[in-house]
Length: 235
Image (cartoon, helix red, strand yellow):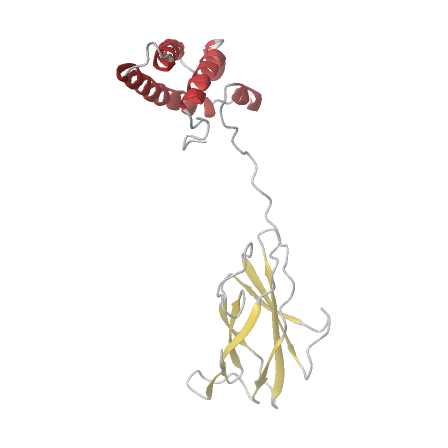
């Protein structure tokens, strides 16, 4: 198909399309939301195009002049058709069946349903600052950013020697539209092991599989100032 969508690519098909379109809209221009004068002009132009096509394709009348006249008529037909189609596509009374009959494109009125994010996030701890942990979520170890169809990330944490094997035991930490964020863990009187996991979610609340939990060792004490005890973790 051409860049117009409804217009065929070959000359013979374009001439046939013009005849079909003229026939369809001329029956009752008002139904198509078209001015009667515009429809009359197109019907006349189409009649001229049809005779020019015959002259340009008959061996006895095919010359450089008739071939050029055909090109000119086709160009004029497309310009006028484009204006008419623009008017028709915005008309509330024109049905999909009428569009098909006239050789026009039926526009989609419903969006393709959004699927749940298929891939789980990869949790990467990038920095430990006392009991403050910087985290980055990735699509995979090579690709940053959210997974396809993901709009937010939901983060959970757990403090203990081992990560929970199921949903029980995890504590909701936050949800965020960002892939880089900081988790402030509560103060502790002794060093602790913490686990972090997450899942992607789309705008409809459909979720991806959960990330493989990542552990981090937290020192005793409160949340230290940013300038104290900064320890970079290899990404």
